[in-house]
Length: 217
Image (cartoon, rainbow, N blue to C red; front, side, top):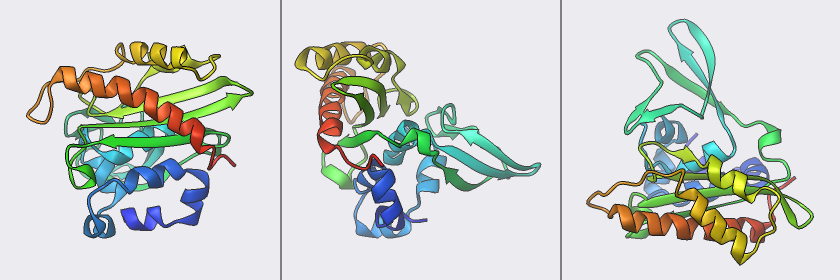
């Protein structure tokens, strides 16, 4: 499916709205009308906007290979800049999103780029949060361009469990995320600037996910 087909899907908008939100940040209409999420994930780009949603919603990938069909997790799928676990002759057949990975979650995605959607992400950040009353029951946080591959942030995720959403807990989150990321200096941005953006986006996307309170059935 093209980006536009996924964005316009009522099923996607109802159950995994952060995926549509992330895909809307990719390029312009011409790119979204022709490009595919499969290509965005499988080319191994560390800046792939769809990778945050795939990690947060914990996609499985059905892959057709020379020895038949197999299932691969999105976790560990990217092995380095421009590299994935796919071998010669492999073909991505479909993505699988399991209900337990989106039911009851509120989610959001933020892309920071110098020139907006038409530019490659300087940093991309996605979060999904499940609340139990005022306390965080489950928290998932992912980044692109914050390490050699798109990543989840286990240290930061653990910090938030059992917390209420407050300025203090969000500052602890920003501190913890530094243990998970490995930003580098490039012509787009320095390591120090990326780290500042990472801390800022971690807090902002978490607030935004709670505020959204949508797509959770």
